[in-house]
Image (cartoon, rainbow, N blue to C red; front, side, top):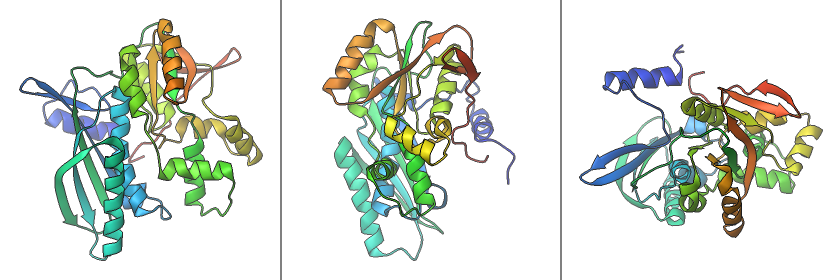
Length: 316
């Protein structure tokens, strides 16, 4: 097993490729003629990313959704895509049709045209999706200012519970469990909300690697301190986690796989972004504020603790 972290591996490649000033971002930007192209690629591997009980159609859809979520956080419309797949010899026609159905569903939902890709044979299923759009400007991970408010779309924690239930083959069922499982198998990025409201954001980032990862990265890139004074969880989840003696904070901040996004705004835009959220039926939650300093701090009735980045990391 390698002792290199994901970030160290990325830095090695970026240095080799001549990008010594590389700064991590949700999407990549390059200029083609006079057009600024926005691109994002994501990979889903069967053994590490697809629970055994997950339908292949849901997994294929989710591989596209992972890219859409990054576009949502940047306020950019995804338009075109390339899909490369790796399939084992044993795959059946029924399974291939299921995968195709998942790709079709995601592309229909978000109006993406797939223009090509590549098909390979291998030991397990792998989906690699690359999505393109164009925009003159994106909202970056840095840019938050002292006094900005911190918001997230959607509540957190359901996906962590859903993954726990799937991986442990739980037979339990109630409305909360159904809701939690659905967030794993059928996530819905808040693309329309990002497109309409990005002009109010000073910074933003997708949260799929874990809320603690997102908050720490945004704080680091903005060189500001983030104070979190509200946990973005619904009461039904809090009650269930307490009854089951499960760690709520871990589920909320470190679970990952939530295709929501975090954004910061000047306080003067609070009313308009809340109004737009209600009109668009998009749940948003004010979770804290930005101040001078560094790091992310949880404020529980005046008692502050450091929130470490314990989100999803490959190779750990």
